[in-house]
Length: 178
Image (cartoon, rainbow, N blue to C red; front, side, top):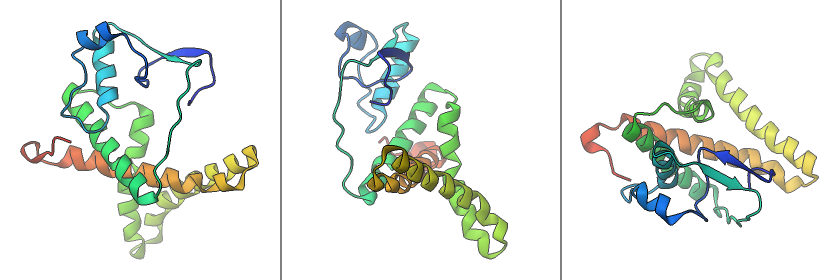
């Protein structure tokens, strides 16, 4: 998975294995969530005094989306789900979650580059970092097809950011509970 250690305590992990008693004690999944229900449960588990161990000895096979469009909509949902989590538990997102929040505003700002070229600079920096990451990963792993990972990262960041802002800025009475 994302780590190569023997295992470690984490804030959020995959729920392939868990103690049913802890799951029941925390109230199980909030079924009103369409996305991020696992992180929401993990928050409640931690609040109830449980800890989450990400095992390095178990393995999962992940099948990625088959198109950039479906990847975008997947991450749009993840962003909405994270915002619902933040709103429900009145939590402050971690820095690693706050940084992608800047992506949608940066893309909007770039639309004003016709007024002044500086409006495009944040977008160009973000694109360079993402695309550079894809290229560096491809070189490091000696696999040219991985170079496009930067494009996927851009789609994921943008979808997540748009979804988060969409959920956060929708008036409370109009929020879609998904």
